Length: 259
Image (spheres, helix red, strand yellow):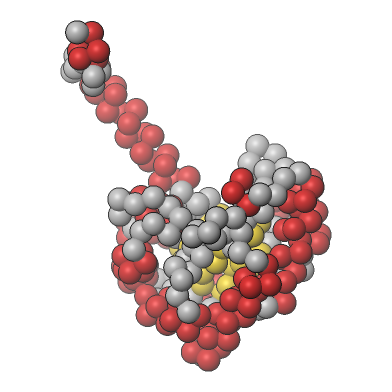
């Protein structure tokens, strides 16, 4: 209860910055460097388990990682729960709470049929999750991800903004605490969404959208997704290639290609 209340409070003050984690060590580092919340990245967690993102990893394995993270850190944990793994709202909330999470993202991409879930159906699902959390007595912080700016959505140009606003309003009415139009890189587009959707909005950084710009626009929460996980792999690859050159080793496949 106290962690859920704290997470909700942090959406109504200074910009909440979430450098997403994927295991206990990365979560502990987030806390050690002064961040008040640990958020998970589904893409990073799935990759660490040997799977691709998009609900391709077994949900039990994903939740087991969340449970280990929640045991390792003293701060609120919010989970990227993708589209909910096909779990009914009561079951989804029960699994989140059992893992020690007090918040979650739920996205409106349809990972089975492609495209986006019908907006009204997604709103009904969010309302079901809110009702299940209320029944459990824990004010789970629900971040409704809106995927109209992602290529698989089928939306383009100005219709992405209009649809994001329409969905954001529906999701807020259904009980979502925060709206998350992921993938917006244009300051003008994000400004229209922030103006059109009531309540807290989650954003991402881009060339046009630094932290100061996002805060000045009224964004209250910023996610980094798998960025740090991928940066770690890129750094390791660079280091390994440098080590290979220092050791005088051939590039893999080069000798075969020369024969």
